[in-house]
Amino acid sequence: MSCFSFLKVMMILFNLAIVIGGGVLLGIGIWVSVDSTSFLKMFGPLSSSVLQFVNVGYLLIAIGAVLFLLGFLGCCGAQKESKCLLITFFSIILIIFIVEVAAAVVALVYTSLAETILQGTVTQLLKNEYGKSTDITTVWNTTMKELKCCGLSNYTDFDGSYYMSHHGNIYPLYCCNNTNNCTEAEAVKSMVPGCFPKLISEIRQNAGVVGGVAAGICALELAAMAVAMYIYCRLDEK
Image 1: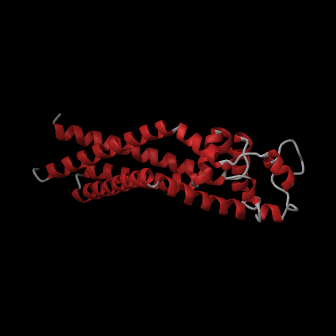
Image 2 (image 1 turned 135 degrees about the horizontal axis):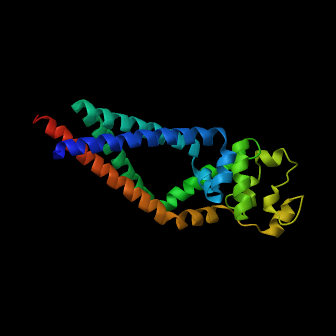
Image 3 (image 1 turned 90 degrees about the vertical axis):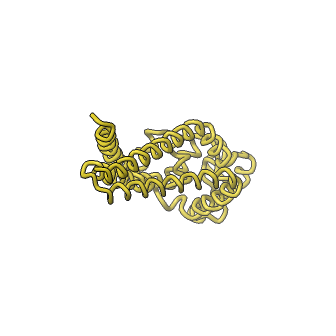
């Protein structure tokens, strides 16, 4: 078997795996969007930490759809030896790779700014949706229970919130220690810490795993682009 034929077969198999993986992620994304409670029970505190910052269901659906499209383009492009499909496959992966590198650079350079923006966004979400949205309430209840924290910064994040306006200006029970009536005086006395530092700490503890996975994905993207371009160029010689 020639090098061209070997790489063609490997590209077909590789992209077939991507199609299957994309379909699986689509299914998981739909499951998380429909039933986030089961997702929280299965994956524990870390899943609730992640759900504070991104809507995992929609994220997985988007990633699954992109992977499915990429796998289809790569598989069909190699099988049919279509230069149009191959160059489209190459271009999409190149764009994704550039976006990933840019996002990594921004995250490293502007970490403090990103955390500040994140705090402001999540705090508003907490004020407006906690107690109103079942999914968000479930996520925050799980987070505050597992991490023994209250709000994002502290109990004051609930001041003027939808929850307090509909519960007689009482804070969630997680903001107080051993009481069924979490008033402001009890919340001050309890001094329950905010969740943000604990969430960041938990995410940073898993930074090595995330970094390793990201590096692996980048390596696969580079390999896929190299093989696609090799097959694309060899087609001119056939």
